[in-house]
Length: 88
Image 1: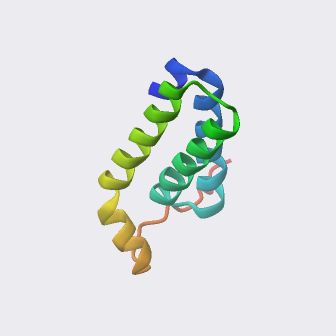
Image 2: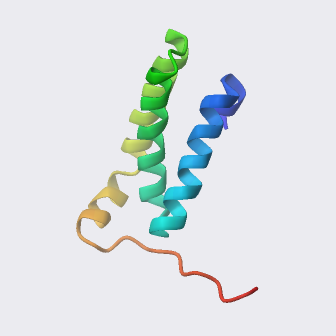
Image 3: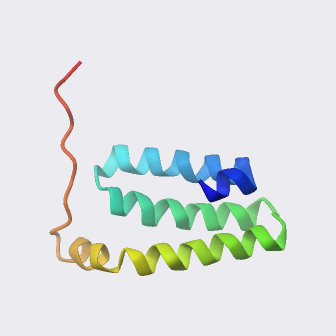
């Protein structure tokens, strides 16, 4: 949400990456960790302002710190996956 407010293009890339990765893996933590890395890469690629690059890197560090238990579960194959709904 912070990135959407600061730079909507970067924010949308992050959101879109999360949606695609979650749809493929059905794991929120993998989607979060992967999408922030994609967002950081896109921020560099798009030649964003230095402040936006630094903010994105800072958020990535916070996200990885916050997800350290999830990372352990992912590495051990014990991270929760969301099941697809059978509702139409």
